[in-house]
Image (cartoon, rainbow, N blue to C red; front, side, top):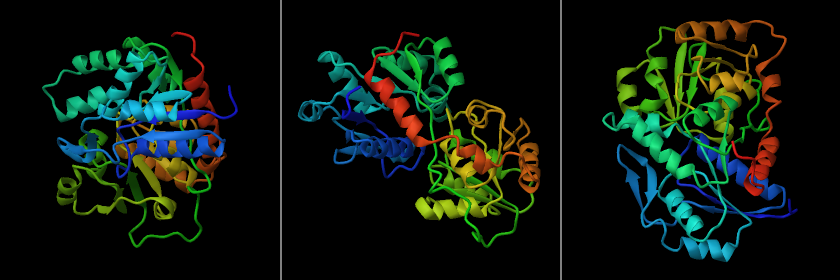
Length: 344
């Protein structure tokens, strides 16, 4: 692998969106540059955009292919990675195929389930057929977990390789004295406030103390009206987000559809135990470690995680999170993006 590479990353998900995909790509770009590589991000910023129907916070590029080939030629990348299946991803895919340029892709989101949740009449099988078509020409399709790799292989996707996720343990850390003006214990959710995240399952639980929701999305207003006892803090980032993590008691992850759940590692790095359903994502992140409780009864998981938080532990959440560095993930990405892996 050359010491210095030029890497072009195409993504429809970008700021001002706040989600795991955007954070992953932001950290990846910064870490690649820290290693001496040159990175060009192709995003909706600076392009004509429209809001995604039912989710206007997500901006989709219009005329996505306009000028894109000029950008690619001017940058002359050593590797092209198409991170999303949106208009920009489609335009980049088309150009790479036309000009016989190898490219990699990644599978960040359970697009079929999300699309079905927003448009119930759209068959999931049809979306999966389209996803197979989209990813088929890629020299590598990067997935965050081994269980997702097995599932996608069973669904007919090929050339699947692992690209895991990490956590910035300097930013996300226990903060002595961090506090919030709410009754304890404090149960925290961080993420998009949207139907596919199943936030209502958390807010409906009968739990002592206070429920906090950090994030925004199309379901926020309706949920805030329905669950007036919960505190909705909006979007937080950086030190403000780290302090809320550190001042909370248990992190609750109600999603059943996330492919990983980057916020799980952030919460663990801040010292929180985790409550979640026993599904892909939480299972892959926790790896059976005694730093959280997975249960089909989410209330029982929450109370179990609270007991863990209050008991001495041989392995603390913080110690567990230390084993997941972003640098290892970046090097994994580089191996996948530059050298064609074995088919499989």
